[in-house]
Length: 186
Image (cartoon, rainbow, N blue to C red):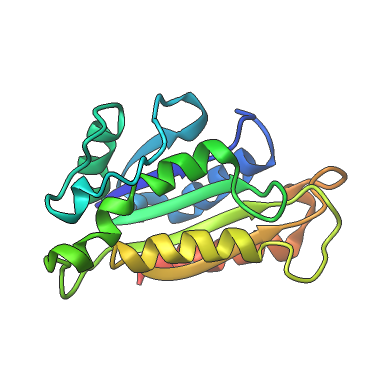
């Protein structure tokens, strides 16, 4: 079993890291070997819409994504952990996600896998107090990634008001992380 984490926070020890660490601890051995891609500390250029991936499974831009694509392919589980800025994922993570256009293009190339056993989930953190649709933009982006990569979406755990509260003080969030970890075990 292999778990790939796409980590989208600039802060190495913030609330997003706390949520991720709690989830991985709850997953225990079911996470298997865990590898992390730190979106803020990778050198990934934005997609240039050259449509190279429409013809070949790959990207014309030769950068760190060439190392990330095989890691995505090898992963059984994909976990996205990200703060939410202006209702979506941070720009550094979005640049990386946009380069997964290669997976969407499998529809054009007609080589999309008919079935996949990959499973995914996402953790989102917002600094503001909770409000309606606070995480919707991030959920749409990551839901699209999972769909285009034929990944079963096991769900999202969100945490609002992180500027004033801690995950460890939220029994509801801790329970949701435990439930999500259980879904990865099934």
